[in-house]
Amino acid sequence: MKIYLKILSFFTPVIALAISFGLTTFILIMIDRDPVETFTLMFDYGTTGKSIISILNRSIPLYISAVAVAVGFKMGMFNIGVEGQYILGALIAAQVGAVLILPRPLHVLTIFIVAAVVSGIWAGISGYLKVKKGVHEVISTIMLNYIGAGIVAYLLANVFFEKDENNSLKVPQTNYLSESGQLPPLNNILGIEDLPNLNSFIIGAVFVGIFYYWLVWKTSLGFDLRATGLNPVAAKFSGADPNKLIVLAMLISGGIAGLVGMSNLVGYFHRYTIDFPTGLGFAGITVALLGRNHPVGMALGALLISFLERSSQILDLNNIPKEIERIMQGIVILVVVVSYEVVRRYILTQEVKLASRMVDKDE
View 1 (tube, rainbow, N blue to C red):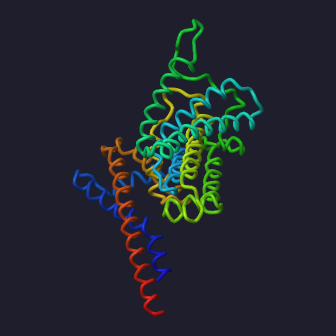
View 2 (cartoon, rainbow, N blue to C red):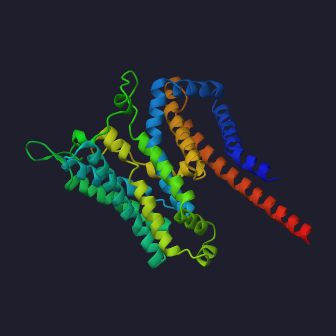
View 3 (cartoon, helix red, strand yellow):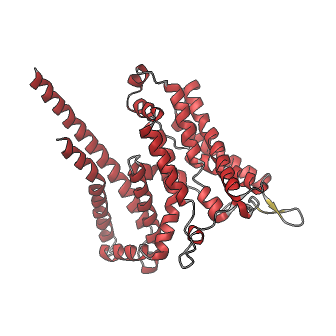
């Protein structure tokens, strides 16, 4: 029975994706578009060499954002403020990095640390408000998103900006990072010149995933986080301090959130500008749900979302609405989340029945 339940849980995402593509096929037929042609175009375009590199680059911040959200989920908390946390951390890190001249490893590491510390502190405010004032983290993190965006806009326009020779504002952006604060593409580091640029921070994303797995499943802190998320009362009686864990979870979640913008900062833009990518914090919630808060599952979820975003670019050129990709994403998320919950309840019911039979047998 246990093996059967594990197999069912494992194949839930596959079943959910199959249902999602079935519903998307129905929608394409309803708008008089050929589903086979649409999926073929997306697959062919999304699997070219240039597209694969683009998908990998897109998936890096999505994955890190998902890990940041997952830390909160494991504690039974909803950190919806990753968006505000990472843009604020990226701006301060960009400014600090622009005024420093250090050896490259130390310079880049300093930028990462500044981003993580600023974002962690910003997220910690929500933890403090929950513990001391009873403010739900969803409310506080949403409000802090708006406050953070306002602070970023003010600093970018009035404090951290590049000026021209006449000392007048040119563009709302920080100064460029010096070369020592930039990460060259991974293929250049490896001496491979024929491929499109693969962001070097993909290695950082791997380490973030390893750190998350170690923290949540291999440490006593991670056990307390998971136990409190499942049953706060039982965890408290076992010796865990829920208030302390709430603040720690938000600090860690925010610290990881600070790294969301680093692939774009040190690997592409090399400064914070009005064109800096936004929306990655909310997308991370999607990826965390798709991956069930597991480091491997979230990696696959990030790749899936990145694939859909990249492959849909070919649709407009073939008279197929590009918006079908957004519809597909929404259906995938909805079906996957519902499927997970249905399977979770079914497994729980079967486990209760199994336990009941075992008790009856002993009696």
